[in-house]
Image (cartoon, rainbow, N blue to C red; front, side):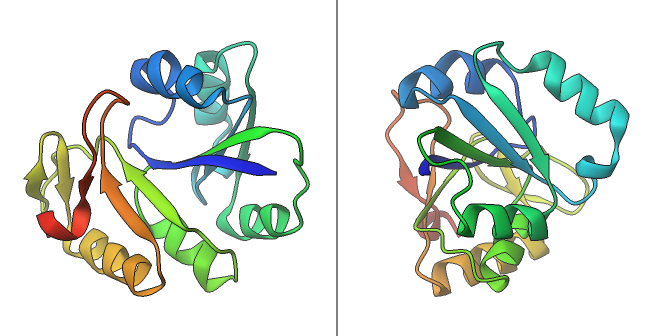
Length: 157
C-alpha cells in the first residue's frame, strides 16, 4: 500500500481535503482512523456522503487500522490516512504501526486549547501526543493546502 499522506484535520472529509489534497496526491482511498466514528452509523453515513465518488472510504478503529495497514491489505492504492487529532496516530504507533510524517491541517478552537498557528489549536493532551509522535521519529508539519509552505510543528510548540 502506498500511504501518500497521513493528515490530521478535525473536519475530516471537507472542501480542502476533496479539492486540494485528494487531487494533489491522486488519492483513491481514504482511511479514517477513529475509535468513536467507527461505531457511529450516522457519522459514517455523513462521511460517506461527503467522500468523492472515485475515492473509496474505510472508517476503522485504531486497532483495526494498525492491523490492516501493517498487513498491507490495500496494496496498489494511493491512501490518505485521516484523523481528527493526534491520539489515534499515537495509538497506532503503540500497536506497532510505523508512521514517518504527519501533516496537520485544521484543529478547531475548543475550550482548553491554545492557538499555535492559523486554525490550529491544541490541548495539553494533543501536545503530549505530538511529542510522543516526534519521539518516535515522526516528522510533523502544519500545512493547510499544498501551496502553503509547511512549517515544522516542533517550531510552533
